[in-house]
Every structure is written in structure tokens, then in C-alpha cells.
Length: 279
Image (tube, rainbow, N blue to C red; front, side, top):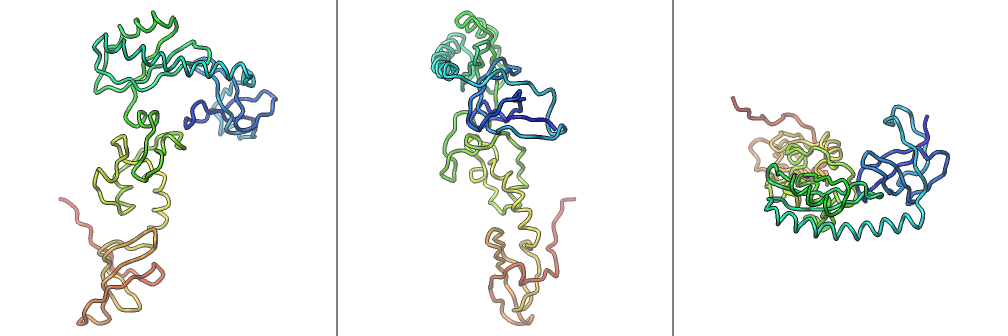
């Protein structure tokens, strides 16, 4: 077992584990740690906790110290400097005639590196841009090209649900999302309906998938033949969340069909629909 604390450097970024070095920390407390990017300021999101050695990627670095008021002030200063750096970089991009869109700027806590995030349709030769920026800031410059999902995470926005984007509020990592997930959730396969602000499939399709899989276990598919207390019939539609099955049933074969709703406990599937396959 090893004692760790979980530290996050961005509001919805990944959680990284560090050795508290015998000190006790609480959630929300600021700490100064060393990362592969340099010395960074982060917030504790997991207080001192024992974890199995197999759950932690070693070596686990020790924290440098708990953040002081002076450290907090430096962070605020860096946030202001990032705004200035953003404007300077925009002018340098225009001056070099580069086809790229600047998204965000980040200073490491010790300003040993400045990271400029951008999007572009293809590869960009930004060697001259790096030289221009290094001449202004006199520190290491990194230009990092990101995708549309990362852009949405950095910029935030309002989703089709009317709430702030999931990626900007609580999702730490992006997970693969497939069109099959939309089918499992009985969604209309209209790109405008199942795509997020970034243009990719909505992240919520992924983290809601497990619930739909569990609910679908006892649900029939459209076209299945079922047996009910009102007779035998064909499933017309299924509402997974409500657990409602709409079917056209007949008590006798010569009778007119009655449209009725059933729950999974009230039916018995006697014939699965035939799935057409392309030869």
C-alpha cells in the first residue's frame, strides 16, 4: 500500500497522483509539484488515501510544498500574463501568414515553459513563429496542435441539453464514442442531433451506454413477435428509459390489431426479428 494525494491542474483535467511526503492535505488545497512540464501549481482533489501499489504508476513523485499566499498570487499573475501572450501570439501568427487558429495559452508555474494551443486543418510550419515568440518571452516555447474535442473542452459552451459542455465541467478524459452507442439508445441517426458542439459524436453517448445496455437486456427490439395477456403481436416501438413497449396485438389471428403498451415483465418474446445482412 502507498499513501497518495490526487492533484488536478485544470478544472476538468486528469487527476495525477503524488506522494504527500508525510503531510496531511484536504480537498481544494493548493500544492506545488514537479511534473514533466516543470514546476506546477495544482489543486488537491483527492485527500490522503491508501492505494494498492498496482493502482499507481511508479515512481510517485513527492510534492514540493503546500501552496502559500505568494504562490496563489503568482498563479493570478500568470493568468494575466497568459492573456497578454495570447494577443502577442495572434499578431505573430498574422505576421507570419500562418493558417492556424490560436485557442489557448498556458504558463507553467515557474514560467519555464509557455504552451500555445492551436487548431489547423493540416500541418503547420511554425518554426519562425517559435523564434519570434522565444525572442519576446525568453523562455521555452511549445506549440501544441489539438483536435476539435480538445478545443471544445478549452473554450466551453452550451450543449443541446441547455447545460455547459460535459467535457468542460466534469469529464477528465475523452473516451471513444461510436455510432453503435446511438443505435443502442434508440436515437435518430441525424448528425445534427447526435453530435456535440465540436462536431464529433456527443460524449454523453459513452457514459450513458452502460445504463442503456443494462436496460436493453430485458427489452425486445422493434419487429420482434411477443406474447402478452392480450394475445400475440409485433413490437412497434420501445422506450427504454420508461420501460414501455408499444405493440400491435391480436387475441386471435383473424381479429383486428389492438395497440397497447406493456412492460418487460408483461411480455414473452417468442420470435426475434430477422436482421438483414448484405451479401
